[in-house]
Length: 328
Ligand code: UDP
Image: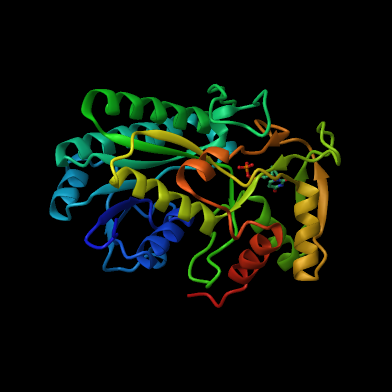
């Protein structure tokens, strides 16, 4: 199907993954409308002509937007993402991530929009028994962030069954890297993610804390599946295409199937940048599973997706270029 004349509403399009996916959608020929309340996103990450500053809790306003700018599908990124914060103030996670999504789904009903791609997370699995993790592993979140996303996955099930709203739930592993053309990247405040924090340690000389080196892994540090944000963005495109072609609701892991320990990522950062990363070993961070690696066979086989940019070198290189860009 040609993407021409297809319009996608992207919530949270001023954020890290949302802005990268918006670029990929535009590159592929889609028309894109962005809805973002700019609470954690960046105004300059979006073409001002496409940006609507609105909160997803504003059900009537979102419905109006979808009627004024009729769209074929919604890609829903708008959410809080910090695991640590979710264990201190869970209420804002349930309010923003869960209630916000319910409001959005209600607005979609009012505007008769029937397709949604949803940003879910590996955190829905908690401490999985099987690694690499297949989509069939049960929900067992160990933090409020993961639970807030499980609840939305359940809402989506009922909205499909009762209202015929079809959804693709994408469970992301560790989004990382930046647009290879330097157009968009990661910019959280406060920053909690490993790779940008390793860069900050280089830039400031302030040591970064590695959260625990006594895990049951070969070097004692946690292992994660780092997926380049461009590959992640492309997973949204194949998912939305499947929905627009009439595909049924489904769920997919988005990862590479290969894990890197915190120390291996640190070594890759030192190799790519040619700089030493000042670091200290600290205590474990609450809610951190030792090993999270995706089985993404389903996404590869059913939707023909392949990771292309997710070597650890490309991830670090593109992220380092972004971290050193001339500020806009
Ligand atoms: N990590 C760390 N120090 C930091 C930030 C993260 O050692 O300052 C570790 C964290 O414990 C995890 C890995 O790096 O094992 C990736 O964490 P991140 O917050 O980037 O992503 P998450 O896995 O929580 O989604």
